[in-house]
Amino acid sequence: MNDMDNSVDDRLRDAIGALAVGIEPSERAWSEIDGRLGHSPHRRKPTTWRVAILGFACVALAVSVTAALLLTRDDASSKRRVAHAPKTSIVWERQFASPVTPSFRRSVMLDRSSVFVSEGYAEPSAVRALNRETGATRWSRTFPAAVFIQGSADGVVIVGGYGSLTGLDIGTGAVRWTVDLPGEGLGAYEPVVSAVRSETSAIGLSSNGEGDVRPPVILGLNPTSGTIRWRTPLAVGTDLTFAQPLVDNDAAVFLTTLSHPGSAPSGDAYAVNLGDGSIRWDVPLGGNQGFGAASAVATPGAVHIPSQLGIITVASNDGTIEWRFPGTGAAAVAQVGDAVVALDGGAIVTLDSSDGREIARTTTSVIGPQLLDSLSGGRGLLVLGLTSAQGIDPGRDHPLWSITWPDRLATIPVESDGMLISSTMDGRITAFRIPQT
Amino acid sequence: MQGEELLERLFRDHYTALVRLACLLVDDRESGEEIVQDAFVRMHANLNRVRDLDAAPAYLRSIVLNLARSRLRRRRVAKRHQEVPGEFRASLEDLAALRDDQREVISALRSLPERQQQCLVLRYYAELSEAEIATALGISAGSVKTHTSRGRATLAERLEALR
Image (tube, rainbow over all chains, first blue to last red; front, top):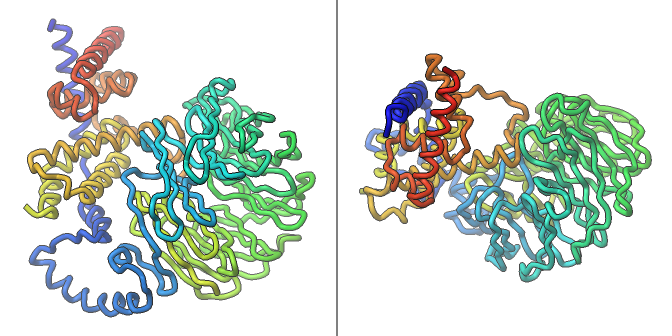
């Protein structure tokens, strides 16, 4: 090793050491870890000084825990980790080693018999089909890199990651087809959100890499064969958000945002005709960047789009703007009957879908509500925060049910027929039974 | 030793060093702390797998490294996935009181490929041997040697060019 090497070594040690010394961990670190572990069945052994405090607290807790256990019939050990109102119950819970994904990007899908789970950014990653009623694994398929579930149609689950799209047999997980995106001239693209439908699915792709301003591309693809029928590029300098595309009137509504600040005049909503990929209309959504997961919803003749400018309602046939609700906080909208509901800070506001007039307003105890979603079969409206959710009836003041998770939600919970599936950042997939009102 | 006691001891003895290591790798204090806290939670979930207590710190460090790599990959692949879109996070250099010559070194280090950065940080901050770095990163000792050597050579060139 010569003098120059020694000099570089010394300078590296000196600079890295100086940088490291400046990093002082938060004093709350242990309490934060402890708080997260406190929800685990592997309870910490309390130290002596804690015993008295814990003993007192346990008496109070015992009353409520006993009451909760008496009101539910399922496995008690799993319930201790998730606080929930008596009306919800945990049907099953699975723990996977890999974390799923932040920002509510969808990685869970639910159908009549199975729950499909992808492991987000794990490498290698896996897609699993779980028995909807028991959580038992039906099949599992491993991928060398991260993949996300796009949807299912015609007996095929479409999954995709960086550079590839794959159609899996919904019953066995066998590979039916694969599309090599670089081979299609779409190197560095990955599927983000898709409207997977029979005959033609619209697969939304965005390009990756810092500074990459190539446009998002929507692929029209046959879900049975993987054959590409059409492709539609959107605007340069934009990326797809994580909002699940609304399918309305034979068009899929995709939302975009800026690739980076200033990369395009605005993000837009696009209604892409599923038949031929032509753009039926597009509406600008504001010039800031935001990778939200709130989707547009439809009422007869109208599409209601969450944006930085509030809720924008357009005519579904030509995109003409009909009204706008500014709101505050996260922009989210859901349909309840003929009306739509939107967030206004911590309030849930019911709006007349025809003119945006406020009909009712109620509050939620969900801290920092992010998203709204309609639940099936009269189970109310789902109000979602980062670690909690409530089922509410917008016309009533008290929640129908609520769930609090011990860790942040990794993806938007999915619900059908009273089964709600959540995935949290600690790798847990939990199936809840939620009541019908 | 009970699992919980082991966890507390690991926290007491290694938490600060692990946070510093994670921060150096991801260049973000908040992410660094999150990574190490996540690592402790995972370690807790897998305590029954830890049979050799002496190996526990290395196991924990491996979890931290994997999570840091995952975080970097997530940033690179998915770009801006923070829960607060567009949130600005100051780099560590912005927060630390570094001399100009130290900033030059850190800036040059940041310009290296990710694997080379990791090898150099593990070598010069964590003081790990080539074999230990190989185990921690899940690569061969030969690869560690290559990455370290190339990283150091590139760094030397870039620092020399600044003179």
